[in-house]
Image 1 (tube, rainbow, N blue to C red):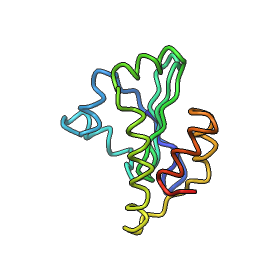
Image 2: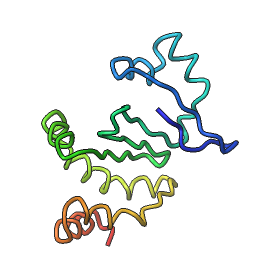
Image 3: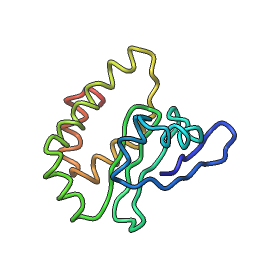
Image 4: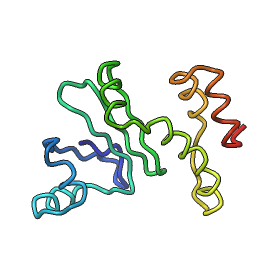
Length: 132
């Protein structure tokens, strides 16, 4: 796990076995609390294995991005069958977050949606969410 930035501009890194990730993330053990002192969850961080076959970016702007090999993504979609619905939920929730004063930077979003879904579906998703 690596924190991408923090107020003093130096990143923090630590190794967390995947089997212990939930315990660490929820700070439910003393070990997790000790490591947690180095991380600011209001920041952005990435989770990745040593094999570099996948990566999860968690943003301070209330979203995450998951990427990986086609085999990893196919397996992940079997486990997390509502992945496309999560994208739609994020897009529709954007208006509510904006109304609550949360300022999101989404300049990257149309290009990413086009890459993942293709131009036609990306435009449909953005129109349904009233983002274009």
